[in-house]
Length: 321
Length: 256
Image (cartoon, rainbow over all chains, first blue to last red; front, top):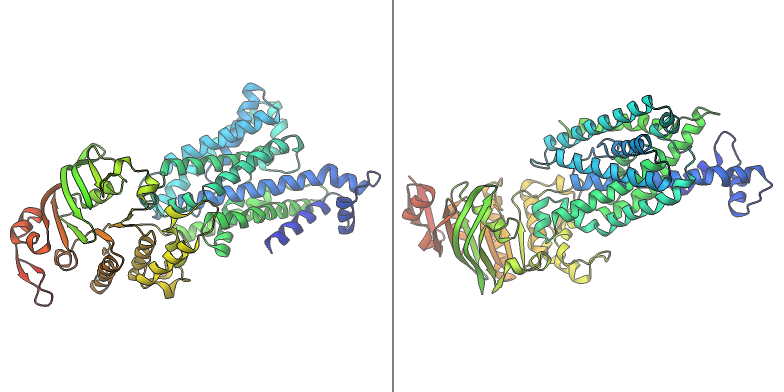
């Protein structure tokens, strides 16, 4: 059912845009490409890349959110809320401003490094106390929100000061799939795949850590190694997603709540659901953004924030009493 | 064969909680560690399980020094059920008990037949098999504690350490849990080591009792030798009379 949803979202993403294409034409273009038809060119030149980008970004953010929520036992964890997307964005913007780095490889590298540093920083800030109680959840969440606000404030400042950076990042920093991402996509897909592979490989250890550090050690599992692997995985996933589409929030918050309902709290089955579902959610939001403001577009990040903001508030009311 | 603790010291930060403690825990028996709050009971269990580093001394498990064992190998021979383990949101009983198999599972392989059998045995031993599909968060405190104990049983180690397995339970549920531990020890011939607050319950359910004070050994041995007015005075600072329990014949503590 979820793969059906994902395929439907992908087809919608191919069909809907400034110029709508009939579904039949989409399928024909996909399977029998003819460069003389305008529809085929639109689909292959613009929308296929955009659709793959959307699937990869949604999958990466949902997987990152799942890993973060399980090992921190924090139902409010999300790469956007906990400042990891902000760290990645800050890394990219500073590298452009100071160092003039614009090629896809170095941008991917600084995005992952920025995400990793932010993840480590927020983890260290939020650590301590009994991990189960709502005070600890609140501390981690507030630490993340502070880091996020700080990073994004610096990003805004740099973009205001520097015209060149501004032009590059006007769309990017509010989260959009529309920017030309073809060059970056092929660098970033392997990074996102590596993040997913680490999460899958370490899933049993992370599941053990979700029972508390003492239980994990009693199962013979190294807590620092498992936390390090989780942070690396989150940095690759969120950093890769941000380098592709800017800091998009709330996918990583919402999707893990749905996967827990469907397949329970273990990480590996959760990933199998969260990866296609995250892709579908992001694409659907992107399609909605294309429909609402036609022929212009509303950036995906804005649509997700409109949906995700109220969800976050509802979850917070439930968790922190 | 036994668990030998040889002049160990354990510190939390700079505070030395256990100072040069030596004792022997017999194999195949139920051992209770008693002592006042802060005497180092939990610290001792955590040190034995390798959760805390030893400042000095060594622990020898069936003639193998624990410090030389890989954590994954130790986890197949010795398990610790912490005092307050955390259940992930939404987890169901059978899934949680299956996590006890973590040291035995191979990456990416689903639990093997042997693992599923171990989970079944553990759930039946702890009396939680009929609630296997329920959410742990929906259970009562007593049921939840039995689920955690089932998870520890499923690890199928020769040695099982339980940190305050009866805290927060009412008396009937305390008895239920202690019967469960006792029965598992004799039926699966496992060695159980637990910390307990209630001295009379320790006397009734343990073959071997260890009394601590300030990280030091006050007495160890069979309950009737350890639980005496003199040891209670030295360990707890408690003035008490000890009489034979009219039902079970074990020492019964009557605080003055």
